[in-house]
View (cartoon, rainbow, N blue to C red):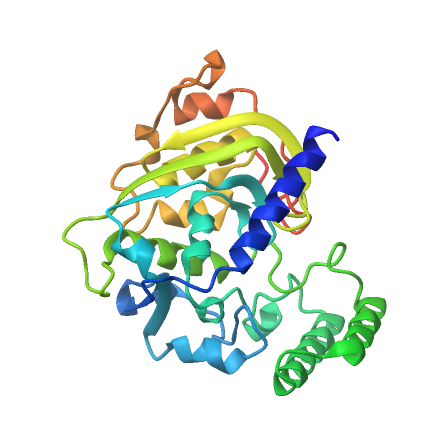
Length: 324
């Protein structure tokens, strides 16, 4: 067995163990960010799609200036967070590293907006263009999901047949950009930054901490993932470990090493601009890199001039985030 096969088998085994867990033994913490949410500057139609077929439930967490998130209380009670993400590309946020990995400690996935339903002219980010076929596909998807929800989320044989029909008409998700899987997704990055704000600034009882939680991120890029990430990424043997005490700085460094321009990835570009519950109290130019590779030492501008690993982005992001 080669190293690539062994790596993915180990990952699958870990995931299956997590699925068997009964839940957080300490319960869950709900926090309403209100005006501190990144959705305060959001200008799309607000018809969010979360992680389940029940669109109304997702909407109940985000409306009228309220933005509620539910996180595992064990993490919220901790004084120190050690984050161990994988170095991968991502279809909705461009990359998935320290910031995106925090989605794993949420306690209710359907409170997380992943994209906004509709085409651009309908103030949605579900598709990159407003052509008629995309509008039809959006209506088809909504009707299909409503039907699945009425059947308890389980469709059986008929659901699989409809999915196959949809694939014939609209194309497969490995070839066609849909469901916010592109560089213009203006929803997912806001949700990710909100989750990080909650984890940094709030205690287990949902009140504000006196100071931000201490933090260490160690990104595993020994065998990373590129292309159609996060689920169907191609193995990328990068031989890389990146560690630091701030997730925005660590993720910025990783993006540059992957061959991406962090300024073109909303998750990172906007993370540096947060004023309410900031995730970094310094400027990107203040990051200092120490590496066993001589050309990866110095400041951010030095790293941006150095050789990179040439990661292939998800096809919905290709041509938009690569370093020039």
